[in-house]
Amino acid sequence: MSGLLALLDDVAAIAKVAAASVDDIAAAAAKAGAKAAGVVIDDAAVTPKYVTGFSADRELPIIWRIALGSVRNKLVILLPALLLLQAFLPQAITPLLMLGGAYLCFEGAEKVFHVLFPHGDAVVAADLAPGDPAHLEEEKIAGAIKTDFILSAEIMTIALAAIPQSTLWMEAITLAVVGIAITVVVYGAVALIVKMDDVGLHMAAAGRTGAGRGIGRGLVAFMPKLLAVLSLVGTLAMLWVGGSIVIHGLEELGFGWVGHHIHDWAVLAGQSVPHAPGAAEWMAKAVMDGLFGLALGLVLIPLATRVILPVWAAVTGRKAGH
Image (cartoon, rainbow, N blue to C red; front, top):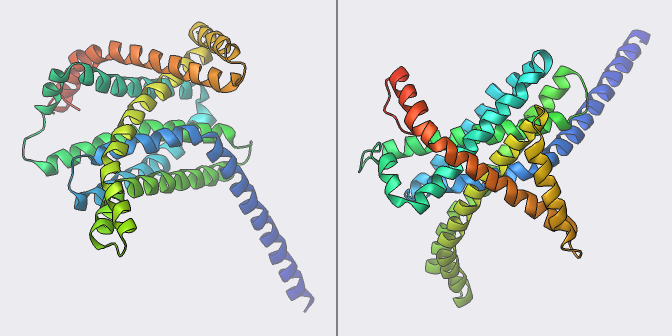
């Protein structure tokens, strides 16, 4: 009997340790997720544009495939890679993040360039066979997962930095919880956004009251405008996040003059708005980070399109395009 009681005591002690670990993981995940909230918003803003132009029955399957790719990015590639880098080569994390930030700047600047010079779209469009929606869908999904990888890398890196120093398995589980939770939130929100027009159509056609049908028609009319705004926000987010990543990386590597100037100018902007100095300073810094990202991206466009992509095409045997 005494042996059984001793065993029960041991089981109870193990259960208490496990419960404490779960609490620690939940607390660390919440803290890490809050730290990464800004990039999460960027991720949610960027994604809806990838389903624009597809039929309604393809929207959710496309979002589902992008979400699966996002989970794979976070859990299969980034989580073990970040933990290994942190353990054995922590100095490599900053340059890799800067490469990701530069890619975001390139993507955002390319979209701005195509708005200013629409004829440039023909170069990219030439690689997509007209009347081939399956090929276009694959291209869009691949592009979305590629962009998600950069944003996910930033999210997971911020989350890892926010996790208190702990054991390897604790950090791994916390990062996994953060990655899954953020993916559910981002792509759940995206699915709701892109399907709201279908909800509006249903309400407009089958609503039992005039008010309900009116709300449905309002949703149908409003959603294209919302998607256009989100597309714009997504492009601006790419430039802002990409620019801030590169600037912060330069500071980490000892080239902090750009970041210092931006900080000083942002402080001056905050001081010029005494009623809301914090908001004005944040906005000024975000604008300057975005302008830096746009300038860097515009410089990278000819480098990418005339050097990197042709070399990549020659090595892989694929057509130069993206």
